[in-house]
Each structure stands twice: as structure tokens, then as C-alpha cells.
Length: 333
Length: 274
Image (cartoon, rainbow over all chains, first blue to last red):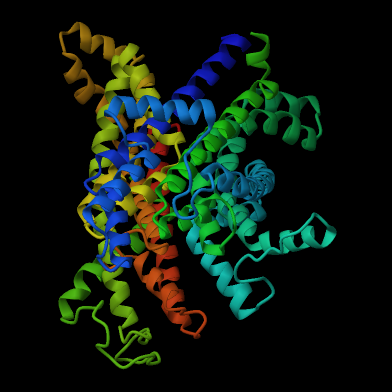
């Protein structure tokens, strides 16, 4: 498989995932028994003390159907939906704070999610893989056993448990970090950057710790297996220094499956990030989703969900495209 | 076959949790989610092993029922995800061609689409009339893909063995080859996948419940935390209400994880490779 073939197959898979994801978000709510519009009207009627006359309700229903893009046959709606989202990136107006467009909310919160997730992903991946490498390479030492045990204990602990434990320890019992995120609006300054780091510390720590177990165990198994390969024995007999063997031989060969695995598990990591944001009231996509649910704002909810699918698929694509830079077998074949 | 250390610890934890959560309720006739059964905020005592919360519920009994319900949901859903992933994985790996490509596109899409946001939508749309059955159904839709991917790659490599050809030339049908020749080799992995799936299901339900999007009236490992957070348990110093379910969840998940990796280790030493 040549480089061009590799890239085109990845881009093809990317487009398929996007298409499947957008299609699912279109059909799922339409297959559900409950109708959000009727729910919304019932809610408004309750607020108005059942005083709205049938004519008003009919008009309201018609305009709501238009806002939700529910006019015409299912096929027409679907084509219209694809066109709006793919060509114009238009998710319609937010219904709770009408008429501000949903895309405005999304672009306000997306940088927070990407910043938090990106930073913690890099930290956890680099440190976790280094720990795993050491644990696998020196697997006989007591330290390696300790590091592996750390990985085994961290691996199955879910995101929300880590988040709650950190909140309990560092925001209640020993209150050195804030309970929920409050960042002053205003221009960029050192103070603001400081406050962002201070407020993001616990959510980021949650994501870093949650990623550790997986990285440590994966890398440990790989480097342990690669260490027994013939070329490592040859290098050792040749007199190559141990450190060169570890980084230049074992690490280089173990890192490739870890990159593939990262591309596959990025969806799960993203799920964890959304949940962590909700628990820390961190102003990213996760919190936006929670707000959308709380106010029954379905346009906003579907917008954030499609944006999540797009971000995850794009991140996986970027990782896949970095891969040939590290794997000469794909570049030179 | 000798059990390794991990498997022993893992199984011990699972046995204690299963026996405890299924047998103890036989000795209890009070509905643990009933509010005001006992006095509020009682300390730890022999009557209330973990004290009572601000709603007058016994934390220990609530936890016991939570573990039981989470385990029922996890095992129930995992039976279906394992069957689906076994069927799709084996057939895709053995038959190959267009069918394999179609199954793989579907599998990779389900894996790479972040499931949590979609679960949130489903949770919102069926809220109010959700029951555990619908919730389980939704979890099945998202739970089968990882298993199918692994089983498929195993089937793909087993297919290249000589005995598969032998079997085919002696007149076995595709179905016979899949079930009599390939399935036994993948069975050990399916057990591992089954346990991993239990972990995934309990975790996902609990994550939804913690933010109030599951059926929070049913005690589960997530809903107990939802109520504790909802009534500001940390703020009023009711630490046991949070700490007890957190510790229980961590131990249960560790037990599931150790069992699955321990079992995998045992079989890979027997097979001679990982």
C-alpha cells in the first residue's frame, strides 16, 4: 500500500464516519416515540395558564416545525439537513436564546474543550507511554512491578469517579482548587492565563490520570514483547548502550501500535472529557450539552452532538495522517 | 490449568460482590429508596453499617441494591453484545470480501463515533418513560463494536490454518466451519470480551446517571451518586454517602478488570502466545 493509497483510504473512512454520524443524529430523534415540539408546546401552554387558543397553537406548531427543519417528507428533510450542515454549517437558531445561532454557542465553547482535551491528552500520552516503556523494558525490577500495578489500578477507574475523588480531596477537604470553573471575561492577560490554568487544573488532572492506565498497560505489553525480538538481542551483543536500545529500538517499534490504538480510542476519551466538563462546570461542549438538555433546546443539543462527531473524527484523521511520518514502511513502499 | 494471581483476586472480588448483593436483600424487607425510613444523618452503627443520609435512607442497603441492579444490567446487556459481536466478528472474518468490508465500516463507525452524546440524546428523549429495558437496548447498540473487531481479526488469522482447508475439503459447510473449527479458538477471548462489556455497561449507565440522564429512581452505582450530589452531600459533610459508592465502584471495576486480564493471561500461556 503506497502513501497516496494510505491517505485516500483514511480520508475515505473519515468521510464515511462523518456521514454515518450525521445520519444517525438525523434519524434517531425521528424514530423516538416522543415529539419534542408537542412537549415544547405543552410547556408553553402551562406557562401561559392554558390560555392559548387553538389558532395560535397551530401557528406556533408550524413555525416550530420550520425552526426544527421538520417540513416536507422525511427524504426532503434529510437532504435539507445534510445541505445545511455540510455546506453552510448551519444548525439553526438556538431555541432557548432565540434568535442567536447555535453555531455561535458552539464556537464559543469548542476552544475550551479542545484546549483541555488536547493538553491533557498529550501529557497523559507522553508520560504514560514513558512509564510503560520503563516498566516493560526493566520488567524484572521492583519499580517496574510498582509502575505496572499503578497502571492496573488506574485503568478501570471511570472518569466520573476520578473527578469526584479529586473534587472531594482538593476542593472540599483540602480546598486549594475551585469547586467549579469561574473565568473572568476580558482580554488576554497574564492574570487571565493564570486563572485559566488554575481553573483547568483539576479537570485536566482527571483526564490525565484516566488516560494513564491505558497508556501504561498498552506500552508495557508492547515493549516487553519487542524487547525479546532478535534485533534487540543482536544490538545488545553488538554492544549498543542500553539507553539507545530502549529508545531507538524498543520504543520506536512499540510506539506505532500505540498510535493506532490512540486513533481508535479517541472517541472514548472524548466521552470522558464531556462528562468531566459537566462535573466541573467547565465551559466546553459537554457543559453546553448539559445546558441544552436542561432548557430543552434541541437545535443546540444536535449541534453540539454533530460537532462532537466532527471533532473526534477529525482528531482520529489527524493521528492517522501523522502515522506515516513515524512508520517508514508506509512512506517507502 | 493453574489460576494466576490476578484471576484469583479478581474472581474473589466478583464472588463477594455478587453473593453479597444478591443474597443480602433476602434478609431485608425495607425498600432502600423509600425516603424517611430512618432518622436522618445517623452515624455509623451496628444498625446502619454506613449510617443514614439526609433523606433518611440507609446508605449500606441502598448501596447493596445499587450493586445488584448495576450487575443485572451489566450482565444482561453483555449477553447480547457478546452474541452480536461473536456472530458479526466470526462471519466477517471467515466470509471476507464485501460483507467483511461492510461490517468493518459499520464497526469502525460505531467505535469512532463518540457514543456518549448520542446516549445523552436518547436519554433525554425517552426520559420520563424510560425503563431499564430501553436503556439496556440503547447500551447494546453501542456495546458490540470492540468485541466484533477483535473476534474478526482472530477469525481472519485462524482462517489461514491448514485444518480449515482440511475441513472444507471434507465437505463441511461455512456454518459448520465457523462453529466447529473457528469458534472454539475464539471462545476464551469471548469470555474476556463479555467481562469487559459488563464493565463498559455499568460504567456507561453510571456516567449517565451521575448527570441525571438515566432512570435515577432505580438504585444503581450511578444514581446513588446522582442523589448524593443533588442533595449536596459534600457540602453538608455527608462524606460517607459519596465515599461508599466510590469505593464500591472502584473495587468492583478492579475485580472485573483483574478477572478479564487474568483469564486472558491464563489462556495465552496455554495457547503459547498472547
